[in-house]
Amino acid sequence: MCGIAGRILNSPGKVGRDLVDLMDAQSHRGADSTGFAVYTEPRSSGYVLRGMGFDKSAIDADVSDFSNLLKDNGSQLLSEPQILTDDNKHYCFRMEISDPDDLPAWVADADDLCHRIEIQSCGRSLEIIKDIGSASDVADKHGVREMIGTHGLGHARLATESSVLPNASHPFWARPFSDVAIVHNGQITDYYTRREKLQRQGYRFLTENDSELIAVWVSDQIKSGLTMDQALKKSITSIDGVFTFMIAGPDSIGFAKDRFAMKPIVVIEQNGSIAAATEEQAVRRVYKQEAEVINHDGPALSGIWMLQQQSKAA
Amino acid sequence: MSTDEIVIEVGERHIREINRDMQKACAAGKKIRVVDTLSRHNLGIGLPPGADLHFEGSVGYYCGGLNTGSTITIERNAGWAVGEGMADGHITVGGYAGMSVGAAMIGGTIHVKGDTGPRCGVAMKGGNIVVEGKIGYQSGFMAHSGKIIALGGAGDSCADALWEGEVWVAGDVKSLGVDVIIEDPTAEEVAEVDAILEPLGLVDTSRNWRKMVSGQRLWYFESRDASAWLMI
Image (cartoon, rainbow over all chains, first blue to last red; front, side, top):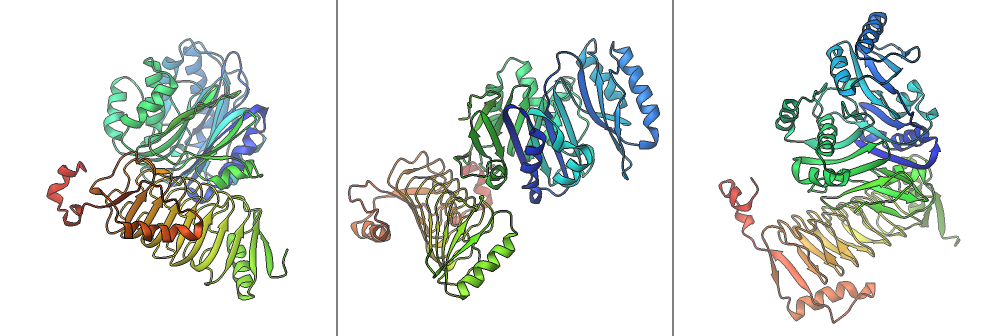
């Protein structure tokens, strides 16, 4: 029983604050960890990286090796990395880098360091912030409320299928596809079979979390020629399990829901903005007045909300 | 506001505190008007018999759960499992009601003016659910007793694995669940349903009812037959 949320603003604004409100209202759905995928205003070149290192006593060596790896791939740090430490052994980082020669190849190289340092998002606008603790704990620690952007996702995790670790928290980045993130409520029952197939295609997974798989699977379907809409519909019949997930890209948020209608999603759409969440009382934190609430309660549903905003939910 | 009525505000107060206020109002014999509901969960649960609650706006999960004889009106939508486990009383939902309306209820009536989500009346063991709109996917699942009456239609897998409950649908049924048969109701049975609809002002003698009951084959289910039921 996790809680998920999505938010699109009709113009850039305090999307971080809204995501924290949406997740604070659903804290009871997942006490283990909380995460946010915030889409800030996009840059024309270069990427923002978010991630974590597993040993804060090794920060200098990690940054040095990581910088060398960037150089080998035709990229460099554009500013001093922002490092956040606390009582935990792990540390969190935010880096801005110039464009590597080949993004997937660089990600593959960088993932060779994944036992020390793990990239958790890479995008022109996407920044994933996730950690152990409640929505307000994570928001306070990482300054999520102050983040300005256009849209984003939130997740409160009740761990069922993999460990309670900061890097097993949601959202997941669809590595190596930039600017794609997912949040998921449910369990995928054909996880290992599907993961092996994707690994044979060359994809790499850094966790045992089934949600990481959905993000990559959907992105791979789009890479193979499907539209987002087609990929979401296909996920309903292809992926085995009970699930509702939301997947975000640079200009949209899509959702898909299993054939058994076990995991809820409700939406309020108003004046080109939307708030979607597992529970209605969460979206009412954002829209406090009585509003038309759309309950996507049925089985086998999917839809896409676009920025500047034509709903295609059906 | 009548002096016999008390207004309770929900907002962001603790639900336990709100339900305690409701208990006190009931003890004082007051009607209760609940405002600023913000779709919050667990409102009006376990109240004493005879309470009279009116919710302005929408409520979240489990509203009116374990009702033992209260009259509860919700002006707009209700979240999952409105009236779960209720034994008596009457709940009216003015708009849409989410999944599992009246789950495991044993008595009383729930009246939904809009549509419902999936599994309306799941595992109910008595009482009646009247839905003016459509009931969602797999409604009536394993209903042991009582009636679900849908005037607007039903979604897929209707009445799946029904036991001794009945699902009555006046509109289209998208598909049937496993082990369901449709019977032609007798005039006496239609009169029984109309007696439930009459106090709600919903009787219409021109309706073409589909009465769904169990085919009773699953009652004697054995695991070796699972493949025949497409369960594995």
